[in-house]
Every structure is written in C-alpha cells, then in structure tokens.
Length: 514
Ligand code: HEM
Image (cartoon, rainbow, N blue to C red; front, top):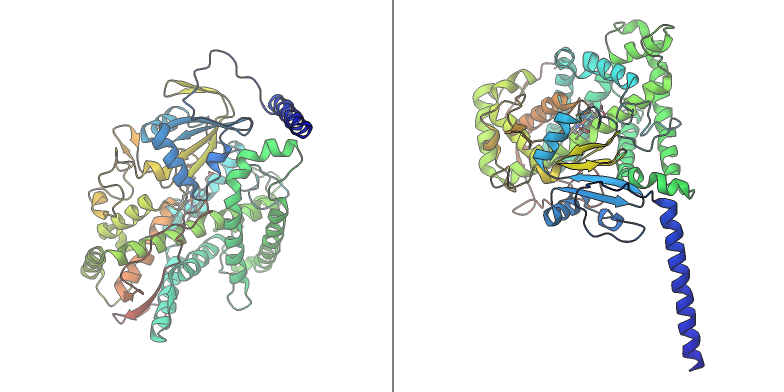
C-alpha cells in the first residue's frame, strides 16, 4: 500500500511539474490574441506545439492536401507561437495575389548574411525592397527576360547538341541512361554559360562539384520549411536547425565561385563588356556611384540562388514528363508525329520551332501541373489584413499548396490523369490557364511580383529537351510501367525511383557544330 501511495505521489508530482512547465512555456512562447479577431478555422491542435505534428510529414505537400480536404481550403495553423495561413484553394490564392501582392512579397526565410545559401544577399530570400527591385530588373534585362533569352538562344542550342551527343553515345554503347543525370548536365551547363559566360569545366571536376553542391543544397531545403517555421522559437532556446551544414556547403560554393570570378576578371577583355550578368554585376561592384552597392558576396549569393532555383526544378520536370509519356504510348506517338511534321528528322528540334509545336508545349504544361517541382509557395504577411472575410494577423506565414490547387477536382476534369489536351487551345504565355473566372488554378511558378522569373527559361529548356528525346530515340524501360511514386522528405518533388532506361537511335541528325 505504502508503495502504491508512493507511486501515486510521484505521478502527481510529475503531473504538477509538467503542468507548471507547460504554463511557463505557454507564457514564454505565446502572445495572447487580441479579442474580436475573426481568425480562419483551425484544426484541433496540441498544447504548446500547436499543429507541428501535422507538418512533420515526409511528403508534406500531400499531408497538407489531406489536411485541407478534411478541414477546408483556408486554415489557420500554429506551430509554437508562429501563425501560419494554409491556402489550398485557387480562388483564395487569386484574392491574395490580387489584393495583397505587396503585403506578401517577402518570404522572411531565416537568413544569414554570412552564408551563401538562403542569403538575403541573393534574390530568393531577399526582403522586398530596393535591393530586390535592383536585382530583379538586372535579371530580367540581362538574363531571363524575353529579349535576353533570345540573345542567349545560341548558347542553349550548343548545350542541346551536347545533350543529344551524350545520349547517342550511350545508345551506341548500349548503356543505360539515368534521365535526371543527363538532364541535370544539360540544365546546369546552360545555366553556367548564361550566367558566367562559360560552362564549368568537366575535365577538372568543376562541373561535377557544382552539380554535387546543388544536390547537397537540395537536401538542405528539406529542412528549410521546418527552419522557416521553427527558427524563432528554437533560436530563443539556443538551438539552430542546420547551421553547420549550411556553413560547410556555403564554404564550398564560395571556393568554386571565387575561382570562377577571378578567372573571369583575368579574361575580362575576352568578354563583351556589359553584356552578360557577370559583367554588369562586376561593374556595379567596382563603381562608386552604382545604383546599388554590390559586393562580391552579393554576386556569389545570387549565383547560388540561381543554381538552386533553376537546376533541380527543370531537371526533375524533364524526368517526370519523360516518365509520363513513356507510360502513355499514345501521347509519345502524337508528340513524335507533331515533331516529325514540323521539324523533320534531319536536324534537332530548336527553340524557334517551339511556337509551332503546341502539343509539345501542352505536354510540358501538363507535366508541371501534375508534378510541380516546387509544390509549395512560402511568403509572409507583413501587415494584418482580411482574406476570405477572416482577419490575418501581421507576420503570419503564408503557405500556398500549389500541388493541391493543381489537383483540385473543382477546377480540373480528371485531375489525376495526364492529359496534355486540356492545355491545347491556349498558348504557353496566355494567362487563360492560370486565371479562369477569378481563380488562380495553374500555379506551378507561383504568382505575383515574387513569382518565378525563370518560367520562360524553364519552358524552353524543358520543351527542347523533351523534344529531342522524343524525336531522336526509341526508349525502353524494365517492366510494363514506370513507378510514379514520389521520393519522401524533399521540398522539390522528385521520383522515388530515378528513371533509368535504354535507348535506340531512330534518325541520323547532322549537328551544326560538327
Ligand atoms: C520547371 C522549372 C521551375 C519551376 C517549377 C519553378 C518554380 C518556382 C516557384 C514555385 C517559385 C516561388 C514563386 C513564388 O513565391 O510565387 C520560384 C521562384 C524563383 N525561381 Fe523558379 N522555377 C523553375 C525554374 C527556374 C529557373 C530556370 C530559374 C532561373 C535560373 C528560376 C529562378 C527563380 C528565382 C530567382 C525565384 C525567386 C524569385 C523571387 O523571390 O523574387 N526558376 N520558382
């Protein structure tokens, strides 16, 4: 009996201590909401951690989709004291970008000027303001805008030829091809050349190093979402989520980029002064009265952002689309017929052919709808405002689930099927697919002023890569169908089983550079 009393007393004591600790943490972490707030609905939460357990899934875009189908498309979540607005509806996304675009134009990532990844000196994490405006203007005029893309067409065409030659080589040697590996070389080499006027050298392992760093950074972005939400509460108790890894990858990027910049400066006279992005940035670095005082670290952080934002996204889009069309032989045949009739089979598909290849354009759009490589858009409401009739407090994190929006049966017929036809009557640039009756239903590249500035480059790169693969080779896979499962634990959606196939050359193409 004495023993039982003793255990009960101990349990009571533990319970009391736990309650006291909870109360202490509660007052430490939470500010009391003011009365009269009509906040959006909120699913049941746990004490202290709030909805953290709901966000810890390995396939986050999917668990968020489940959450919204159970509790509604506009949800107010809380992790410790961090408020989050989860949006899974195209009409609410439309309302936000129409009425609050400037208010949600900062991401507020946990940035650190000392690192090159997620640095406020780059573009992705830069707060909305003068520096972001300066760098965005520069990027559009020198790198990603329609005229800049026209100027750099030749650079990409050479890389597409190299891509074709690599595939042909593997085909002749009867080697298996890992699609993402070849696509990544194509995308990364084109990006390097466009940004820095030269590709990273394959011979001394530089290219491999940059690709390796991009892969490492992608692995870090897995933790980024958690860092965004948990940064402040954890910082208060002295815990950093991934500072060591960030520091190491930043240091390695710094090493590679410093070497590239020094070489660029040494060969300055070979470059057409002021024509590529590197020229303009180095000029702004030297100029006393430049529009914005740019440092070497700005240049490096910007390049790291562009490698991370532009490489994995386009690479895995190419992989997903190849998997879809290999699983759907009718789509593959229709694509090939279109390419044969417009381009023929003696030269490679070129960017200038793309406007005449509407089915190819529609196939790429459909691939991005069903497998958006960046499924979640993250921003912050700088000021309090009203959305959907509810009050949204200032500093609320905005999480838009593009994956759920682009699979919403209210907006898309047979949303889970791969049907390029649905995009056939509209061109790539038209807003029709995105905005239909005041809903924002196609959101693969985000939206508003912080929407993806690389969308046009992504479309032409992915379309030419898919075009060449369909035009020039017959593809074989092991088994009947490709497994379309998604890899767990990533922010970029990638295939759980990387796509590997064998290929047979179909036509004899003569290359312009040979
Ligand atoms: C299929 C390929 C791509 C996809 C699906 C994609 C998707 C996205 C998405 C969803 C965002 C967030 C937009 C928002 O917050 O509203 C974004 C931002 C961004 N993307 Fe892309 N992207 C792709 C390719 C590229 C390429 C090729 C580049 C350039 C080399 C690029 C550069 C950027 C940059 C710099 C940002 C941040 C813009 C800012 O904060 O102002 N992206 N992208």
